[in-house]
Length: 281
Image 1 (cartoon, rainbow, N blue to C red):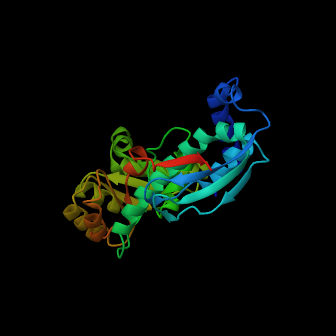
Image 2: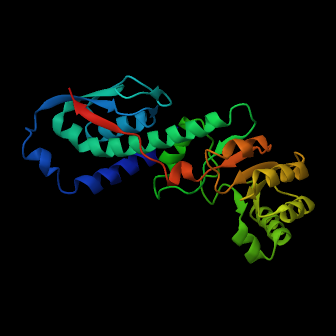
C-alpha cells in the first residue's frame, strides 16, 4: 500500500506540471458542463498494475468522477480487456487521461516483466529483487509494481540498509575495514538496519566470512558456476544474493546455483510500458 500523503503530493505536482495555466485544448471546444464516459482499454497481454493510482489521479482532479474497477492489480490481462470505466466531467476526464495512463502503463510494464522472471524461478528458493535503478521521484510506484508482479523490494533507499558496494570497500581500504566501520557506525548511531556486502570474487567472499557481522553477501557478476562455489562457501551462514547482468536466459542458472535472492536492475531501468488507452464509449 502506498503512503497516501506521498501519492496525493505526487499527483498534485504532476497535474501542475501538465496543466500549467489551463487545458486549453479541452477548454476551447468542450462545454464546462459536458459529462461523458470513458473506459481503460488494454491493448496487449500483460499484468495490470496501478488501478488505485489511476483512481486517485481522477479523484484529485474531480472528486465527483465515478470510478468503476472491473479488474484488479495483479490480474493477467489480454488485448481487448476493459480495466475500469469512468463517468463525469469531460474536461476533467481529459485532464487526468495522460497522467493516469503514464503511471499505469509504466507500472504495468514493470509488473509484467517482473512476473515473467518470477515464473522462471518456479521450483527454486530464489526470490526476485528490484534495485535502486529507478526513475527519480517514481521509485514508490515502480517498486509497488514489482511487488504486484510477484517480486520483492530490495532496500527502498540509502537509509534502510547498509550496502557496502565495490567503491565503498575500495574507499574504506578493504572488505574487513568496511565491515568493521559499518558495525561501529550502527552501534554509535543506535541504528538497527542490515548490512550487505558486495563481493567480486571468492577471495572477497572468504574475507566476509572471516570478518562476520553481516546479514547478506552479494555475488556481483559471478558466473553461475562460481556462484555455486560461493554458495558452498557460505553454507547458509548468511543470506546470499546474485546480481550483475542477469537476464531471462541466465536467471534460472543462478537460481539453481542456490542463492536466496537475485536482483535485476532491468526490472525498472529498461522496461517497455504496457500499451493501454483511454477511450470514450
